[in-house]
Every structure is written in C-alpha cells, then in structure tokens.
Image 1 (cartoon, rainbow, N blue to C red):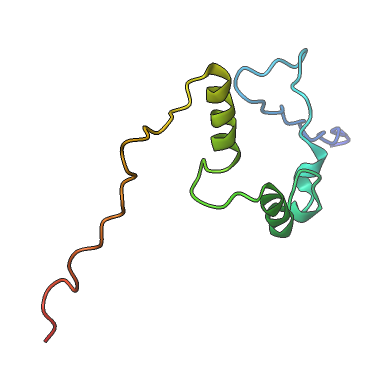
Image 2: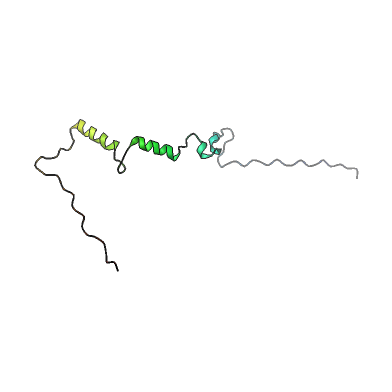
Length: 106
C-alpha cells in the first residue's frame, strides 16, 4: 500500500442569485445609510423639527384651512367670481342646540 491519495479540495459553492439576476448588469448597491440608526440618517426629522415646521406654517383649524383658502379667494377675485352677499338678506344665525342628556339615568 504505498499509494498516496491527494487530499480532497473543498468544493466551491455556486452562489445563489435572485430570479432574473443578470451578472453582466448588476443593480446599484444599497444605500449605505441603511445600516445607520434612524436618528443619524440625513433624511430623518425628529418630532421637534416637525413641530417647528408646523408652527411656521401656523395653520389653525381643520385640514385644508389656511393658505389654501386664501389662495382660492385670490383666484376668485382675479376672475371676478367671488360670491358677494346680497344686501337685502340678513345673515343666518346659528341655531341653538336642542336636547340634553340622552336616556334616563338611574
């Protein structure tokens, strides 16, 4: 038994690629900020920063109130379509609320 056998080389594993992957045209590498914590990323705005932006706009009321309403008025004035109130009709008064507690308390 003087036969010597070569030590076996470990087989190289074939890399598994996604479906439809073209090695000649690889996709761009992922964003390096992906691995940073969220508060360290450039696109991140903290709650306090958002609050400051909201205060700068200074819109109070329901959604759509504020700048949009003034822009609409300016457009209508330019066109001459702003609704003018008739002079003979008094303005409507808010009606008082009706009712009280619903149901009887025991």
